[in-house]
Image (cartoon, rainbow, N blue to C red; front, top):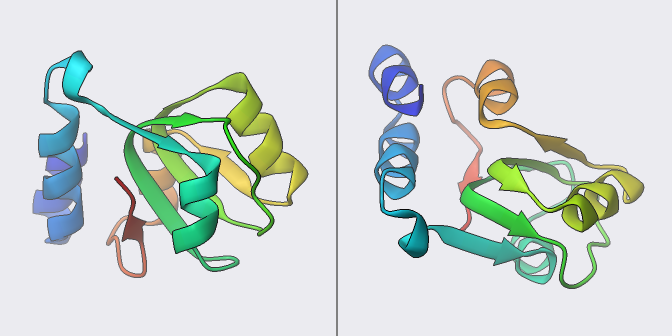
Length: 104
């Protein structure tokens, strides 16, 4: 899905994310909320090509797209006013990938 979006929209960010997700599961990216909070700005979209974990706090309204979320991460993101979106939902909202920050 990411690779098709990258070709269709000519968005290199989706090619990179696709390659990262095609790695074996043991090498997949896992990102804590603390890291997202540190690198993201309010109301700016971030994409995690892996799993978002619930360790830490998030104090900003951030739109996060990821392959998967822990239940704690999803509830903390939504409690801060942000959105936790699946890959498909994220691609529908940001098809060109412009303004999206890739967090790994």
